[in-house]
Image (cartoon, rainbow, N blue to C red; front, side, top):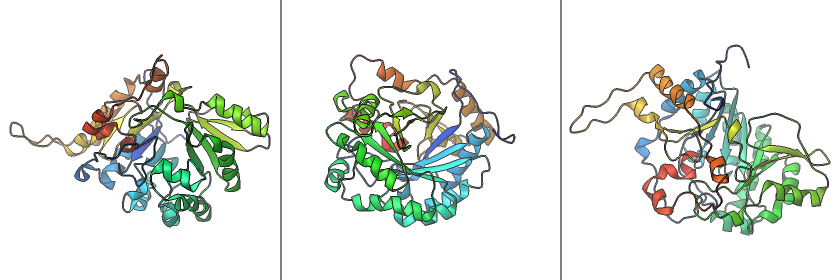
Length: 357
């Protein structure tokens, strides 16, 4: 670690505060089966969304505490108007060593060059299927061609290290593992398969629909021959593997083989709620600290807090962190969808599209 970077905070399990995922909107232009399977959603009030200046201020505080990797998420982050301006503002922070974005790709081709010029370092594009009709069924939208075009646009804009994320669901797209790897090889992107997770808005989840990492590897070995693990030590969520020809791919096995013990990630929603675990049902309201509490009939408006005050709240919460949400879910003998529909409709913060993946 460079000498000018602070030593990151560590929680009760010794996990550092190094990676932050910043949601810039809860809106999305797809309705994917594994994330937004219902018909109607409750959205965050627009007036409660943090401004770019507030988002940058929070990032500055978090990097003072040790965060070096930042990922912009959503919802779909490219639905936030002028998000390239936010990217440019964030690049002024010298402590950010890795500035990335996860996008569903629908709007990426038309913004790729602008985002690159603004300073975005890397991009991950979600693509679960190479078949147009299957894409329409999985996302309830007919945007397959635009997503496919995103990969070429990333290459032309000069992005390196682009990744393709695919959530694998039994009976939906689990027959396309090799096809997706071939697509990734052709387009110079690393494919990462993600086990279908029983988290937040995944109201249709069942264990029967999960294709495990072991099963994925078995299927791919039947096609390609012996697969070996990549020799590396990392806190990244994906375990990386090598095909016999050297092609690298990853598998994120949060459902069957959780990586909670090395998880250094936390998430901030677009309205400023900070979650230390993807499975957490309660978070810390940082917007209230930024803006102060609203006045009521019986109390005056609370004062906004200083950066040092907010940093103290964050530091204390991280040091007390014991979250192991995926491990706790995996230890259950019987698993079903984590959150019910009615509870989700009461609190949009419990949705995956609100806090980012």
